[in-house]
Length: 397
Ligand SMILES: Cc1cc2nc3c(=O)[nH]c(=O)nc-3n(C[C@H](O)[C@H](O)[C@H](O)COP(=O)(O)OP(=O)(O)OC[C@H]3O[C@@H](n4cnc5c(N)ncnc54)[C@H](O)[C@@H]3O)c2cc1C
Image (tube, rainbow, N blue to C red; front, side, top):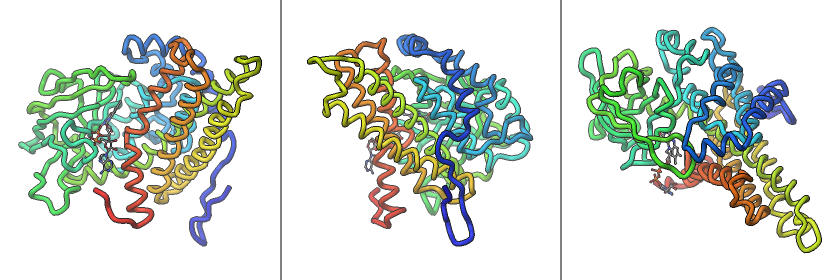
């Protein structure tokens, strides 16, 4: 399918099972990590080390890193296929997806020296870039109000403050950190004066950086991070001081499109499970799925997933074609998160009491997919974006 962006440019959009070689290889890897593996990790709040190792060794986690730095330099669409297949197989990419979506801001704005120093290690798996420190306890979605300060002192920045929900911090060597370098009352616009840093947590832990695990509803290895006069070399500043907010926005369209692909994978997993169970389970002398109250929510979730799939493909195609895809990336995230949640609800209702039995995996996936209504960006803030930036309505916040 071709997307006619304007009279002289056409963006190509593949339908069907694109990247079949990636899909096949990912499915084979995921077969080695069945529900019992995830169930055990979930009950122990443990990190899927073996799963991440298998993906790293296959080279998949370096797929967005340019070839000159040891990656495979593939387009965003390839990454969405990878993440969708992981989730459609019943696995969860949350332990390692940040490496791919954090990359966006850094690839565009990091210096050649920074890339040469870190990217080859990230590509071969010897270095982990999985932590992204943006959200703070007192300011939440209102990112520009964040309180963590970074003050330049000679060859270093001194960082003090706190982040919350910094996922995978205990399983990452590097963190991309957003901190305020110019106080709010000294900038013209609230989006100015924020800066992006690459923090080497191997050196920082115990020297001004403390990490505390959060006991959460899902096994997301998420943490609180405390900075107390942490010294970060000035060479680890990404791009220009004060432009960090703009840099993270650059990476967000890719992030939203990738997360939407995970939601889509979840939706496909729930729909398959619910469909199969509804055909096998016989109650009142007939298959459950013969009842419209069971069949229709599953069918509706399928329709929603198919529509979301088109939007994910459109967002990725525009991104890969170098076009603006803010509207499509946000809409893909919203539509796919809704599709996965509705599919999860349909699966819960179809499995009835058995949905609550952990061995069926429905309740775990249901908990996991609920996250996407809230993080990494909440449904409300996407609607605010669409209202304001797509429909031209008044800003709501
Ligand atoms: C498991 C998990 C993992 C996470 N991982 C990371 C991570 O790795 N790095 C990171 O930086 N952050 C991470 N987050 C944080 C996540 O991005 C935030 O939770 C999310 O952005 C919402 O912020 P908040 O929780 O502070 O909610 P708040 O900002 O307090 O908002 C609460 C609710 O009110 C709604 N709301 C807020 N303002 C408005 C408005 N103006 N209009 C309408 N509704 C509004 C929100 O949509 C939300 O539903 C994670 C969160 C979770 C739960």
